[in-house]
Amino acid sequence: MASPDTLELEELVFYQQLISNFHDLYTRAQQLCSILVIPQRLSTTSSLTRDIFESHVFRPSPCYLRKHVSWNDKYEIELDTNRAIRFFYKKDGAGEKRVKILSQEDVRDSIRQRSYSILIIEQPLIDTNAIKNLPNGTILKSIRKPLNLSSISKFDITTASYESSFMFLDSLRDIEPAFAKLRTALFLFNETYVILPKFVENALDKLRQLRVEFLLESNKLSNRNYADRDIELASEIYITGNIYTKVWPIILQHNENKDQILFENIEKRQRNEQKYSNQINLNTNQTALNELKKLDDLKSSYEKAKCIRSALDLTVAAKTLMIVDPKSSAVSYHSSSKPMPMAADETLTAFIDLICQLISSAEPNVRIRLSAHEYYTEKFRFSPLPQAIDYAFTTYRGVLEYLTNSSSWF
Image (cartoon, rainbow, N blue to C red; front, side, top):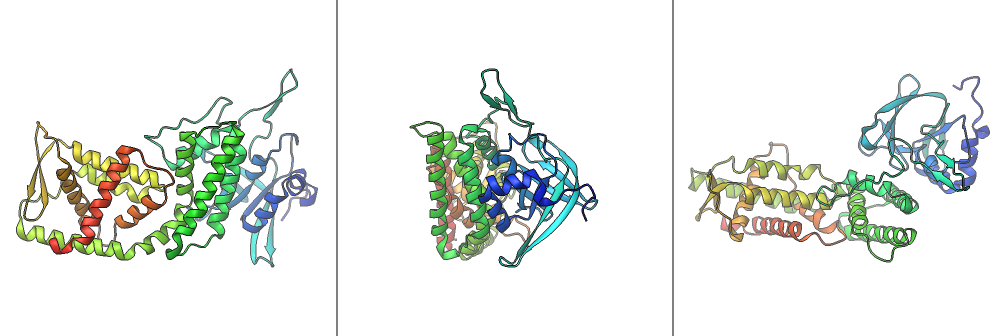
């Protein structure tokens, strides 16, 4: 029900500008959005950029049942039971605020067989007074809180993640149109693209093309005739992380048989170890074991490869003496104040044991999908890994291949 003071939807300037100036956005919103938020009053109309309109168009959150994510991935909202919107700024944990809903209209599209809600509120969800006139007549667009004008998120390849990649790309104002286009393309990919286990390569080709188009447009907007390694890596991490929720179930299905064989072979190996040796230390390098368990929580292929490298580094760096049982290839560790360097074959043997322990120590109803992680990390990356990370990932692949294809040796 509308408040007596609430104007009709067609009378609202924000709505009028949306359908006239950004009709493509309005059309896609009708097709894919879940909530369209329309402010009733505006202090200015000169600063209504596309990004502001994208901040008021929401789609269902891929992670949380009751939340909705803005078209530009910057904000989240959740409908309150008291006719209010709980509004969250996704970056930097800037907190939340509540916004009163003046009117709600539920729209049913009989042609597309879908529905969405139009919510009318008093003021815009974000500050639209972000344009200042300078003395020389030029226009300065300031960045809304919590960012400041000179703020460009730092990007460090050693700590790069899906979240930091998004923040870095989003902070580069010179490539803002290209990044907005990429976000829209990924949203449409997640909503409409059909992926089948036997045709994953087709989806990969589509994603590679989206990345190439983004990089070309970014270089053009920045007037660069050279590749920016940070943007290249950040775009790869962002793309693979963004589509992870959609593709991961397909990857699991595609690698189900291989993971089952791996699980059975490791169980067979562990039974043989218990049969032939009573000196196996089941607490072998717990730190590296815990690191490898993080694979399930990581979205992008680069993050998964980096996690594998970290687990291998922890295995090699452990200040222990390694004793190899030549009969069962099992590894036992004993603390030592004088750690000995590990040769390549010893590193491989230790990593084999680490992965076996990861599988055997899992909860009964929890299956560790190591082959799926390998497949995703290998396929869903668009540029070579750094040498140290590539070495660790190659070691990981070699371990899985050995454990999958060498059951007769156990």
